[in-house]
Length: 131
Image (tube, rainbow, N blue to C red; front, side, top):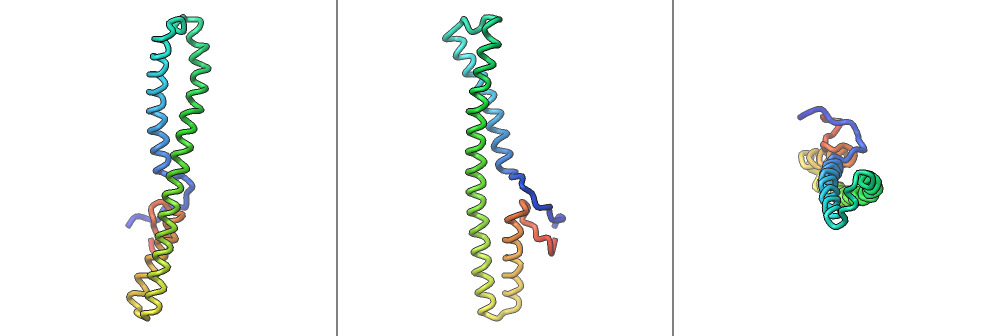
């Protein structure tokens, strides 16, 4: 097993989604610009074009950033709920193992609990005590 990763605040899934949205947003902005110029040819004039593109770019960047923020919050909510459920399940396993007084079951339950707690702060789910 690879060495445990350091605790991180970077959410890899959210980062991938926001990068994808950024790429799609850039393509979308270009497509919308082309549609606007087709409807209003005066906007293609050399003096007018940079001005309206500047203001349109500001508006579009806020729109894309809003979508990216929504994606990030959604990913964090889903992952947080999943992690909370893993910890709750591990607590149940631990309680049942203690009731059964089975050392093998207890060891497995403790490892599951340690991994569940670790995965809350480590994106690879590694347990720093065992590697």
